[in-house]
Amino acid sequence: MKQIPAVPVAGSWYRHVPAGAAPMPGHPAPDGRWQRGKQVAGLYLAEDPDTVWAEWYRALAEPTRWSWREEIAPAPHMHPR
Image (cartoon, rainbow, N blue to C red; front, side):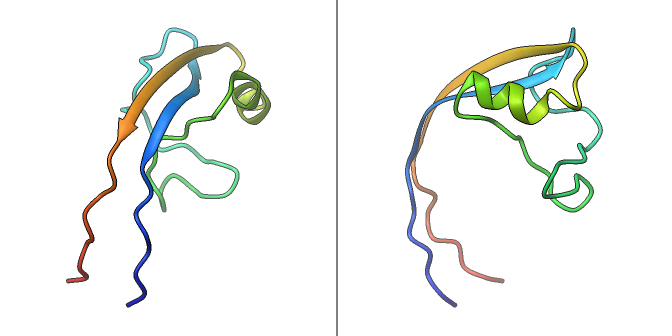
């Protein structure tokens, strides 16, 4: 199995949610542009507010924008079962 190098992640990201909705997941799986929610679960974040608006405006009539700042250490190597 090919080894993939770990990459640390740090920065601020943004996300749109419908007006009045909670900022974290817990709603039905989204139907994204590249992946379907039933196939790949994920939390989709953008690097800047303009990208959030551009990517999600078509699907969210009354968006609310939230931001996160995180520092995530590389995950340890995972072995296949």
